[in-house]
Image (cartoon, rainbow, N blue to C red; front, side):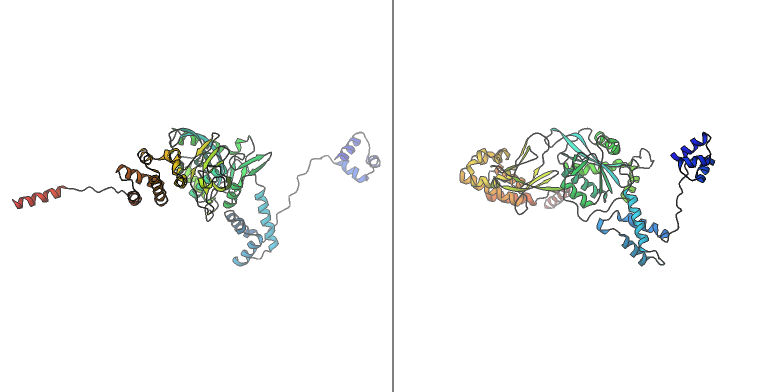
Length: 485
């Protein structure tokens, strides 16, 4: 273009084609042609005409196969070769070549790979995930701060929430697993706020926790992390967090059993879907059916949302997790290394066989906590009954039973503790205590009486007695009495 500009400038000064060609060392015909031209607009590029292809009439079928593949595991998806083989075997008159199929399949996959991952128009079957915070009353009636996992489907505006103590990978995996099982499928893509709960962001990279990587591989969904300070990329779930807090956590709920409460939350979330979508006119429940149709298939088995850690116990058989939370294993395992199963709601120290020594409720937060299962101290007390007065088991017993054991001699106390251990192993700790407390109330706290009472308690299932009309017996007695007179 610079040469054309020079020629036109020289032309304006009165130079002819021969003079311009000589000075610029170009052909005179070229100079004359440019001098005669009066339009230098950029021409619209010509688009190559799309020629008919032998594959055209089979493309909708290929696209449907590839779309169905999105619900299947990676190793069970169609390759270009498999598509070609199926067309040969299943479609009469098919005569396209394999390279033609290969190029078309590659073009479809490249086009899909180039799609934006943060589009604001959401297709069915994708979900956004975030955590909110709300106060509740726990089993002791104390107000405490808890986290709730929120999963929102922007296409339909449907959502679910689940309550947890924290934002760990175990909590995220547990909540998502229960929601996947509830809806009968897996969203094709999940969008997370930064990396909260599933990993940590280092500069521009997100390092996901190993547990969540395993969870992601198990269910086969894609994942996108929002950019820092880019809340608009997941505005639907942020609105849903506030909506759930106002509608499901006001007034403050009393939660004695978190997992039972979470089951109720799932039902309440679905009941909310009967309202109309804020923009589309249909109900949220109707629109969610489109979401449901786009879900990936569930794997054969649900994911075990827990991780395993090796810990060292102290001299009391206790170990620490998350820095400030201490849990008891058993005095027999004091000063040893054990395996602990860490879940969203529970902490389980395990025997070498894999059986749990006990099950603790998991604690969260920055304040130190100590969780002791007094049942694990029974065997140690049997070896040293002299420690009874200062044991944590003594504090946990009902007052009447505790007073009874306080008055026993060493040999008798050892026998009573042995009975308690035996009944706990057979019927459970609570049943054993109830049976022994009842035996104490009757004034007969013996091993035999406790065993009989525990057996009754474990098999007794109270039923509502039907109403019996006793007037028929009154009439019968009157009749018999009258005959006697």
